[in-house]
Amino acid sequence: MSFNTGSFVGKLIELNNSQQSIQTLSGWAIHHRRNAQQIVDVWFQQLTKSPKERKLLFMFLSNDIIQNSKRKGNEFTQEFSRVLPDALSHTYKSAVEDLKTIKQIDRILQIWKEREIFGKDFIEKLQSFRPKGLRSESQSEDQTDGTLLSPTKKRVRSTSDSAPDPDTVIRSLINLERGSALQDSRIKQQFSTIPNEVWNVQAVEKITDRKRLETLLKSVDNSYELLSQHRIRLQTEFQERNKVAAMLKEFVMHQKEQLRSVESRLTEYQGKLQKVQAVRTQLQSHLNSLPDLTTVTKLEPLPEPGSLFGAPDD
Image (cartoon, rainbow, N blue to C red; front, side, top):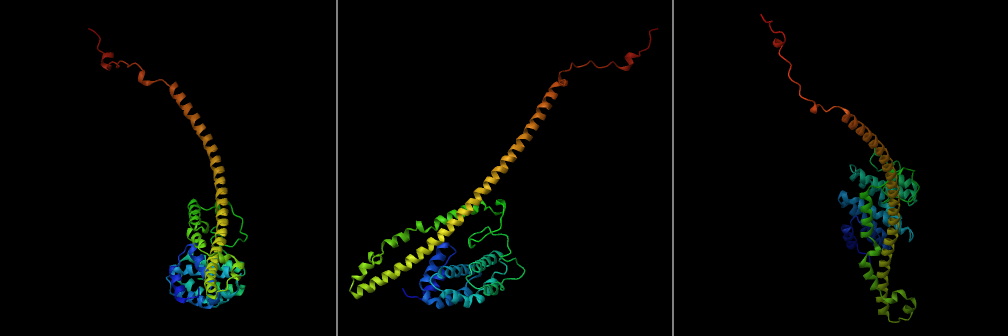
């Protein structure tokens, strides 16, 4: 399958922020790494044309391509280094009031720095385009979102600082299962159509018909691209499941802390309730010991003063 610029532009237009979409297009680009220069040029052109809310998608895509292509060669690392200064300058400017996007870009650069994807001087050059006056990712204490973070040492924090909220846990689990390569029936169906000859080197050696060999070569190319993309998806899913497992571990630890806190508070308030109950009982007892004024006999009215000091008889 040969590279086609129009096809790549169409794929970039259809790109969405799902993990599967980014990985699939990244795998496609890596398969066509011989056309790395064209791919990167088109990527940069479309980045500058895209709405500001989609520019971060292009950065995610470049990150995935750069990191996953390194084991095959440095074509994309070299080509992206050509356009990244202008790309970062453009993307940072478009996100000048979007702190969330800026932090995500910071994280990408931090990963490249930690994994030595690019040289230190080059990373510092890219970071220089960041809007001034904002805290950088390397200075930030908020490292709880593991979506883009590399597995480096993090500062020790209490679980109350780092534990994800329940909504985040639920969303992560749902997204993980929805995008799972293991559950992708479309991939399973595509695998089932791969000819047996693709898996059998000895069978290939017995084929002497040129047309049949050319047909088989096309099938092998398509199978290679399919398997490459699926492998990347599986690798990424493995990493994401590790992150979700770590998130769940933090969440469970936090719940245990909360359980101990609630248990302590429950004991405290049970003691207070007993004290209030004792006072209530004492008050009721004291109240019962007082005379009931409603049962006192009604007294006769006092005589009028005149009747007490009446005139004496003559």
